[in-house]
Image 1 (tube, rainbow, N blue to C red):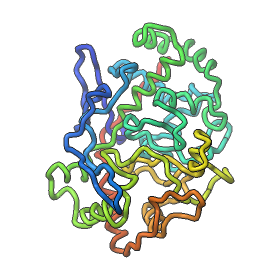
Image 2 (cartoon, helix red, strand yellow):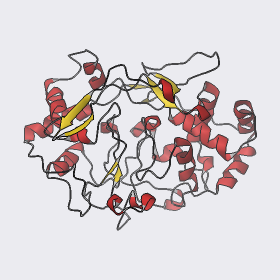
Image 3 (spheres, rainbow, N blue to C red):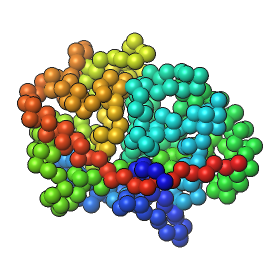
Image 4 (cartoon, helix red, strand yellow):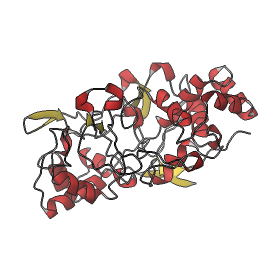
Length: 357
């Protein structure tokens, strides 16, 4: 057994839901709701949703309902290196449960030593995020699931080859037929992986407990930090709502690091001038587990991130108007980091799946 983060196996059609460590239910999009009304916050005349506990359910599309057999299959696929060209690089290689379902390296290493251009984002709470990847090029988890497999610097495999390889494995043949009623195919492969990813949830943090009435869940420094987060530090303008993200794209003037000399982010998807250098606002839940930070992993610590934003971000002609010098004191910065640490969800026991043969 290994320490990972909570995941939920939900069984529909008369089967009971198996809940681990207090995680909420998975449910269809229309059923998702928060146990506490988030309300709104106004900062410099801008009104945004307040931060709040996560919804009691994680929304899932009606086209890919979760149930235990599908989640179990998706978990096996997520950890199976046979989805890659060299049969060694799995989804978990870059989104590791031991490191916050993210990658502790600045940028990930793929088949043949290929070096990715961006830092691998965490899988935590991706079921609450409408657009996937740093640039939002995938409109669903199902679409995202196939992207790294075919990426030449990641898993570097031809998608049709993956189907053929899995179809030759008796255990997968049996499971695909039992779960989907069909032989192995790309749509079912994507649905299974996405089903598992929706169960990777970081919640029940000290912040959640504090907001839900446990006055001792956060210390005084973290409480002060929460006030700064929603006020002077302006963090809430982008990191708002239960998942601490507006799900939008912003240019913070982050210095470019790693193998890419230039990365225009969201612009590659929209081709809109204002999107040059803009990247998706990441969730801050369990942020202490997912270093390094920013799209290129340029910052190793939360303290470095706070210093960078305190100075007003970096120089860029497309800098977001949300970013400006903050004038934080050293105590302010320490309190802000204390609050960010209070967003860490509770760890659970995690068991690796047995791979089909």
